Amino acid sequence: MLERVHDQYPQLSAAERRVADELLRRPNEFARAAVADIAREAGVSQPTVIRFARSLGLSGLQELKLKLAASLVGGVPYVHAAVAPGDGMAEVSAKVLDNAVSALIKCRNEISAPNMQRAVDWLAGARRVEFYGLGNSGIVAADAQHKFFRFDIATVAYADAHTQSMAAALLGPRDVLVAISHSGRTAELLDAVAIALRNGCRVLAITSPGTPLARLATLAILADAGEDGDVYSPMTSRLVHLALIDTLAVGVALKRGPEAIAPLARTKSSLRQRRLRAAAASPGADPDDPPCT
Image (cartoon, rainbow, N blue to C red; front, side, top):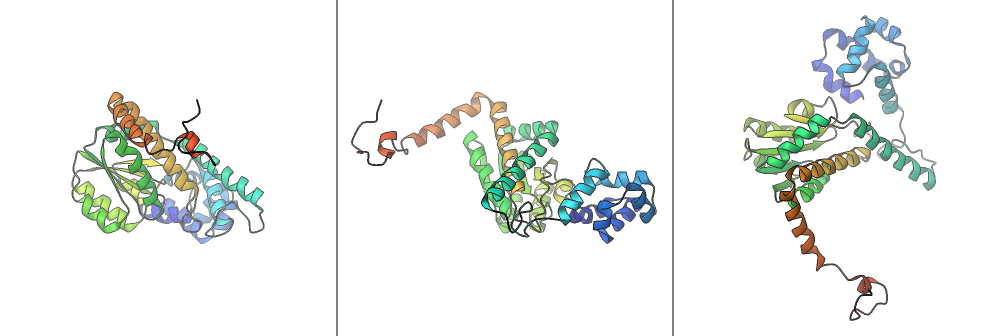
């Protein structure tokens, strides 16, 4: 949450910056204070405090305070925000899975259907689609490419910053670049996005609200997983991004109709001969025996 305030700071009004300064100066006290106390300490009106929270992409002060408190009090740094050092595997399993389910439900409730439809229209009609991500997001980009190439769309995934910059220079108005980043502030990825935009390429970002990437992209699919990537290993954000990619893939399949079904059927058919028969796959089965009917 503190990183989001830092990122949004240049876009805030002068009065909102005074609220931001108060938050950054005393985050623990801010998370517990009433709106009247925050306004008094910052020297602004109470509506300004509410506007500040909404400028961060949140519904209001209450959501801001909840997110701020969650980011200040966490679990085991670099491991997971929900677990505690003494947890057994029963607690760990429940907390990790519950955290993932909650993040997915939150994403479902907050997703912008018009933005998703526009993204599907772009992807379904693109000459070429490229997926860029670095680090953990590079794995998500590779998963996206694995799904979309089966629609007989020219696709590629790049997880190397130098390759991304070179490839972005070759994209044009008929192409779509999908940039994936939870933090949305990786300099190398932003550089590649800027290159593609200068060439007239449409850029679809999958990122958190209020990030530099969200502001730079032509269209942003926002996913607030509530995960501090600077402190914890990316888990819920990765799952949310993968789910969004799945949703876009299903949308493109429906948009393209029979044009998508035929290549999907061919790719499935190409794998059948590479799979063991059920009987042969069973322990102790004779590979020369015919499968049971």
